[in-house]
Amino acid sequence: MQFTILLKDKGGLKDIPAFCQQQSLLCELVSETPVIEFLIQRQ
Image 1: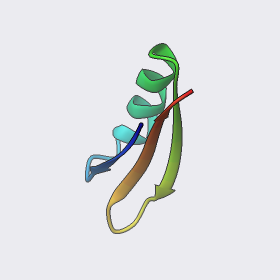
Image 2 (image 1 turned 60 degrees about the horizontal axis):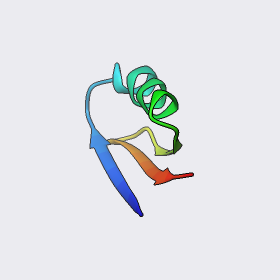
Image 3 (image 1 turned 30 degrees about the vertical axis):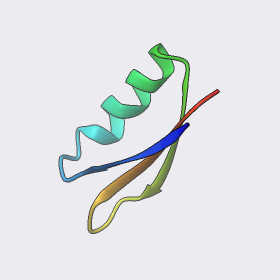
C-alpha cells in the first residue's frame, strides 16, 4: 500500500517524516516546490 501527501505548510517537512517514523512507515520526499509532496509506504 502506498499513498501521496501534498502540503503547502513548510512545517510538514519535519512533521510528516517524524509521524511516519513513529508509525513504522517509509517516507520519501518527492518534491518541495511548488507543493511539498511525500510518498508514504508500509515497510
